Length: 153
Image 1 (cartoon, rainbow, N blue to C red):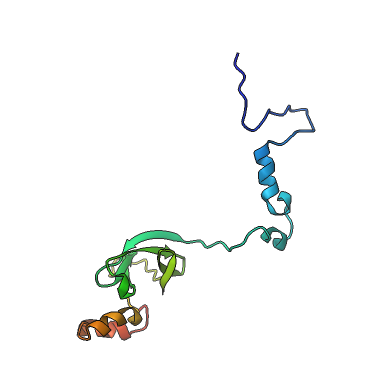
Image 2: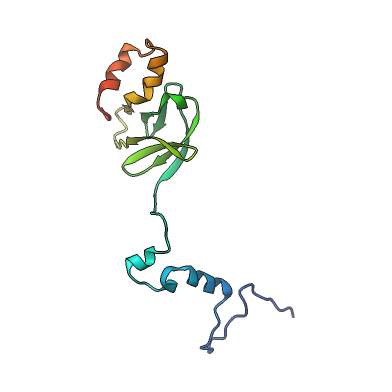
């Protein structure tokens, strides 16, 4: 009969009160603030250096018209990122567009449950300044009103 050795050490007997914890469990217990005991919020927060940043991340490619699509809506991105991949971080109330870990722009998230209406296009006029400086006539008259409207309209 072959003896199997556990990487966590021998199994304790059920009647043994002086049980030695396996090294991994001891290491994890000692790593917790307050040695694993539930104390005050400040005592538990001492071991953590940053807040939880809950978002869902998607990889997107910016269109030639400097827009990305999310949930049937289109959001503007600075013109310097046209035709490039970006990271879209989706929070419950906002969208953050990042490139190589750096935040590029932020938009309020538009949530519309109706599938009968077309999606909205959310422009930020500052994203198109580089295009207008290079090509002053590049802005078509049909798009000018959208750049002057408040976001979300």
